[in-house]
Image (tube, rainbow, N blue to C red; front, side, top):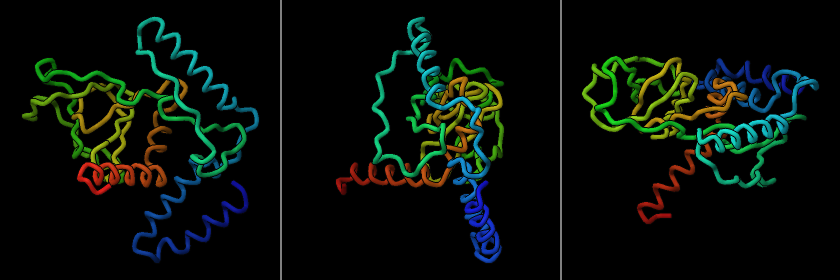
Length: 222
């Protein structure tokens, strides 16, 4: 952590306990700094992210040729205009689909779901904290709609009302409502890191603005 970052945190610690939402704002600041790589010194011996991305792409190509995953179209590079801040040396900007598979699990018909299967609904995840507050089995709920399969290690993203900030890493296999999107990270990515990427304040701001624009357009206001 450099002197500027330390001073920034020290200044906000004083105000965190005075403001009504000070603790929340302090948590957001710490998360933002962590995602920018400013909380701890960077190790120059770490493998550059550019090399990791090349390895991920090679693995995806191999799995595609073997028919294990669908062939994906090339993604446009991240433009300078899209980059909100300067990254530490060795880091790289990349699109989500470069290092994960968004909505990467098949749907399942209710008739194929085991009674003992974990059924995750959006209300089972606490707002903002993303804490799991209820774990129910399929037989405990009268839910006959189509569900999505997820596997242990998948990042489960609540796409309905993204401002609720509900993102969870699955600790076991299960099924979920289609309001939740299973994101399958590559083996090169720690699922918990992806979870925090999706919970960072600037990402929440981006998806919420996009969500509002889409809704306005659907009503003829855009």
